[in-house]
Length: 147
Length: 320
Image (tube, rainbow over all chains, first blue to last red; front, side, top):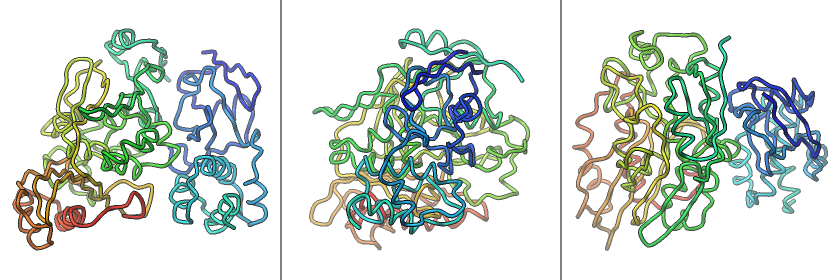
């Protein structure tokens, strides 16, 4: 099936079988491999992208359902939290980092940053096997203006 | 690999026609069906995409709260009047899943989600009567820490995972479908010898919305093994009017303890909001509990949760 997506501001036409996830379409068809496949079942958040401005898990939705949708991936993100992750050493292996950044940018936009506990709760959809959580919280806290 | 069709429908009539076809499955948020497709638990011939139907309303009026079947969990939980007037619903939603999944998942889909029993969800096809009727139940003699203590059968001991459904039962909500309106407490069914059927809905029947009457103060308490992003071991939703430290009316439902939200059918009118009196008042409801050895702890845990939910103001977060 042919589906028309807008990915990072550019029109992309992809031809996919209905069961192909948005994640696989981004990575395997369009070639944007910054979005990571971790668990592939909505548990780890490594595949977090923004669809029409909201963060979602790209592994849990089908590409064909996103005709005309505005999709932002890590390749299209330009947000101060990216620099804050560098400054706070908010990663080790880096595999979860694209998803953490997409989620962090959304968490900040949503305003769920009133306390460290609130940041942890609203970043809980992104797991980090290196357990860089304290530094991730510090990075988000700084951008929220509570450094 | 078998082929699967895809149809994006533009209105409810078109959805109904498509959904009635054998092998058709509705898809909206995708957060449940996509997993079931990957595990081959569901192998539909046709995916009917209802995600763009105009059923996303969240309205609060003098007669109560109305939620469209396709309202997103995050939107309902964030709605100021849901948070103030129906806090058990906002709390149940916000204590579910993750922010990303709540941005995707819908009201109707949440009610239609299937059990988290590890044997039902197993990567390899293990005996599970819910997944493959007649194949047996691996949980009864296996890992059944999460098993039901009420309403289970020899065929199935799985619990229903929805937090929202528990809140809706405590708030005496109604579920509107394309065929009928029914109380939320009657939507899910007990397994009996047909555990593959989770709800009373027929093939092709679609949830259109949820109606919640004006509610007394309410709260949702979820007890789980980690502080966030986890299903309940036990949970409780309460809606109660009190005066002078005594319950005037109360309705409560339990989650994580049965194949469906389990109404706590005891009369709490006149009971003081003190631990010992509450424990004595709710104890009769637990006489019917039939746990497995590994799930016995839920009897005590659930009773403590009920007392705590009734006696302690519950914040939206951090209460686990």
